[in-house]
Length: 359
Length: 124
Picture (cartoon, rainbow over the protein chains, first blue to last red):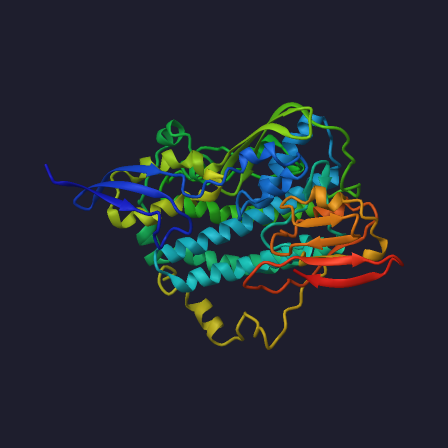
């Protein structure tokens, strides 16, 4: 039997922007088992519900994550709105949809850049992030913030996007789509990129279900799971197909995310053409009493929000299950039997967001 | 052939075009109108009700009714805009332009004088 050794990986590692620690059990260069330990960036945001009133909490939940910040705020707001039986105006729902899809483009482009960086293609990394910059600028024009938008409130949204701004954004996205095709073609065609991704990190359909994977990780294993199909916000009026791939490897995950970029642009176009002209928020009176949960599709997968309120201005309990948390068991499955040199790349393919996971 | 040199077109384009970044600080940054840079107060219309102080998520604002003063710790402020939304007199606004960094935290205080105009500003 070959000699086994244990190699610590992280919490500080060039490929990880955020800290997570893995103990890798190696047999020569082969990973036999990976044992994760998390908890390096736990901030106790969930327990802040006892100190901040339920309106202020919107700004706290937004800060759970720097990439899907908008959707965290949206998840919390819709859960509280459900408890209070508030029907937000249709325009606010459309605006939330548009911002959510813009966040998805921005998150997937960030991931593509990090992936290129992980296999050492620096120019491609810069190119991806350069495209992402346009989305960030659009966010700043529309909401006043590039990363944290602070536009959600219980009962709707705070800022409107006038028709002119929306058509400008669609024009920018149209131009961006062409550049995006050119850049993503490199990911899909290039020999060097393929040699690092194709056939690496297979997660079979059964394993994906058994390990409870979510989001692009699940869809790349050929399973049609997308919370947007449940029709929250304005997604019930939008026509789109869930993107899946049967190949189950790292390349499939890359392919699914690239296809989702173009899908998001299409969804924004549809939303802009269908957006009704109504109010953007309704006044909310009183305090929430009851409990509710919300499931929504973040760029990384399904996020689950649970809120229980007791009729006072403080919420009793808030619980967030983030997509990365659900994907860590699947990652451990993928790491079993892989080459030691592929570990950084495979960790990236789940699009890890450790701040989300630990809150 | 597509699998080799697939990035060459982009490289060529980038080599012979202007840089996409701006020459900051030679070319100054122009912020969009909605940028949440810092909070400003029109002290003339302020009624010292303290709504902003009570609603501020990080607790950066302090209102002293007996001294007629409104103060903000700009290093604690997260530019969420909740105070602007809560202000009953619309005295607060959030405007573009970020405040300057410093080596130690300071609190900016604005005092409302008896004739309603803005009094002395002090940093502590």
